[in-house]
Length: 141
Length: 117
Image (cartoon, rainbow over all chains, first blue to last red):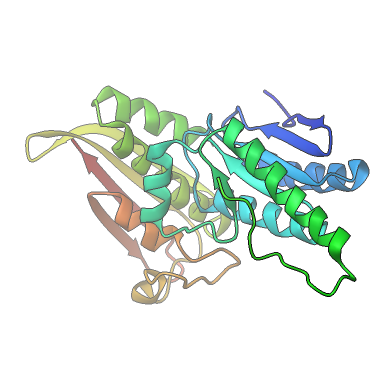
């Protein structure tokens, strides 16, 4: 029985891959661990791989939304990658839209998207104070 | 949540498709969580059976909790008496092929879920 989901640091990002059946306590511990690590490592982005998750119910969905909101307040972007097709269909039918959560098909695309999101953010910071701040064209994928 | 693994096992045994499997496991997870959160735990029957000649899985999840006073209201998306999203009951009904709920205040709640091939 794994008690904690490992969170890996990669440059300015944190990576985590949920490889176990997500029970409720594990989900709560993860929220706590992740917020702590974001602050400790001053992380700019978090990539969450859920390709091994066989179901996402309303509790796990809510946990993902919660993580995304808290991270945003802590100035870190979150992207969820690798959702299984059956899980996506089930989520929609259940009525969960995962509002406000950025997603990507796989780890590689997710990482690129995360880098782009953070880069767009930094260029915005640099140009702050200048009169013409244009953030209207974030790089798409 | 042990119930998810057991439901998955039965769903595989009757050779439900992957999407149907995922749906019934998710619905079971929602209902069982309701039973734990509101009903303070209970019991769950999982059986492999037939429905109109098709291999089917039937779940009966029963709790001894306070029950639900207004079932019609409880089945509406977004309605919750607790701190959830209010999607558990209404969402689960959409995920399964047949759904019955029986509840009286003070008598606990019983939910029956069906999924067939």
